[in-house]
Amino acid sequence: MNNSLPWPEPAEVLPLTAARPVLDRLSSLVTTHAQDTALIPGLAVTEEEVAADPPPALEQIGDELGGIVLRGRTVLTLQIEDRTDEGPYTLLGEATSYYPLYETEDSAVILALGEDGTAGAVHGIGEDLALRLAAADLPTYLEHLADALEATLTALAARGPAEEDVESERDEAAAQLMDQHLFAALLGTDEAADGPEVPWQAPSSAGIVDIPPGTLAVADLRAAPVGARADLMEVEAPGDPLDLRVAWRERGLVVALLGG
Image 1 (cartoon, one colour):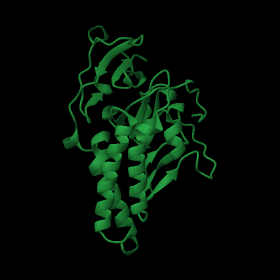
Image 2 (tube, one colour; image 1 turned 135 degrees about the vertical axis):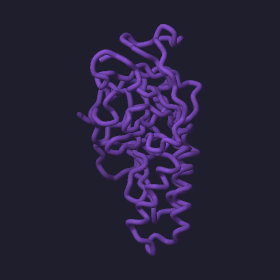
Image 3 (cartoon, one colour; image 1 turned 180 degrees about the vertical axis):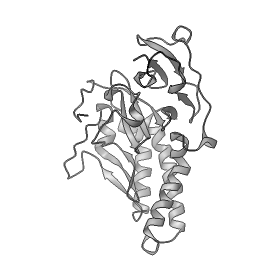
Image 4 (cartoon, helix red, strand yellow; image 1 turned 120 degrees about the vertical axis):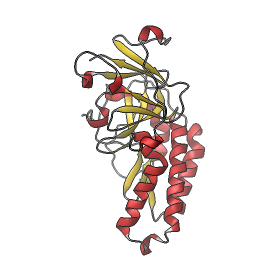
């Protein structure tokens, strides 16, 4: 997929002030645990050419922070260079309607983007293609990430200095700890951590304003807790279910499922 996307402009930019406390916290964690983690420089401070095409909504935050790497594994990126519409993104519609923050071969954490480019909720998508609510907005998700990263780095530090550890074992421990503290619950790899399932409603009874034409069902996550899931494959629809597409309303907290 072409990295140069037709982002809506002008878009509401997430203010740096809203994320300043958590950005400072992440920076402090990386500085304290430099043996195990590193910051990816933001677009305004990097000396390297970056091919990423982030949405305008992330301009201020992305200028300062490009992402975080933990033991060679990128656990946060605001600089995705290669976009795809396959795997976990199969049902997500236009590439301008979401932005990946973390991805594996068959799962991802994405930021929902409105038709006007406004940044909204953060969702996890697992191999089952169910959406799991990670946070109502990006700064809150970054706080959850910082909590998981701090717990992981504290546990790694308890193993002793990195240079005295077995590299492969430390790498594996870091991955398992981040999954335990954050990703497993968001990506559906831990059934015990699954949140409540949000029911699908008929568009006529959902009480949602501005439902897109062609909507088959609506899931309302506005009052749902973190981890609540909307199972996209549970909606009965004619034809191939992989032809269905997601549209966001209410800053990504209302999920409309459209027919293919």
